[in-house]
Amino acid sequence: MTATGQLPEVGDEVMDDGTRAIVTDIRRGVTWLRRPGRGEWPAEDSGRLTVTRTRAERIAAGDA
Image (cartoon, rainbow, N blue to C red):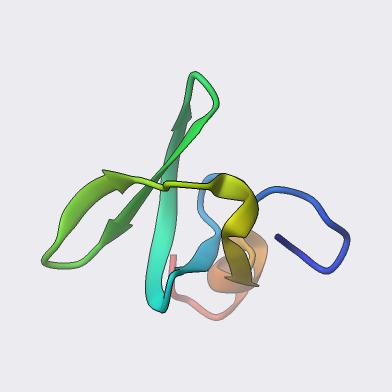
């Protein structure tokens, strides 16, 4: 979650149980994550995800 308590959005960089990933989709309430070389997987608990950078921050840094 972000400091404001909001759930991650598509394009956000998050930490999921020690793994850094990008939110690629939200399907039927399930947050899907992707990491280079690993493919895509559903987050076990979207509320447990920690946003490390928002999509806007990634774009500003040239990472999106």
